Image (cartoon, rainbow, N blue to C red; front, top):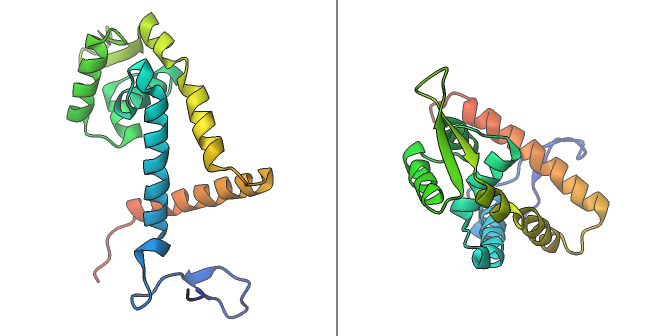
Length: 171
């Protein structure tokens, strides 16, 4: 594996981790992150299968339950999911009696989302399952390593947000 190039004093930030000639999928940050996310979703889904919930269902329910999203637009933004696809998911959740929609009295264009008592009950195992799977993925890490990883991932997310918001430069 080739060493990333760094600033001349070897202690500064890396200027380039990858080069065209030595790039491999197996050492790609995106590939590794995607594999981890796929494993996490698969394991959470396996554990929630007996509760009749899939990732597509428990994820929006979790955000509604936490009070992080109370409208379709907020859910769509937070989950980075097309509003149309999310509408179909909410239709299924409503048909299962797990969520409800209520049109705003102040703005008829806005529809507020809430979990039904059955939806709240269905969410009960989710935090524990998420902790169980997350802890399994961090098996063998010290607390400091886990906190360092979280800090590094947050830095990477900041870079991703900046990249997303930056204008596309001509190649």
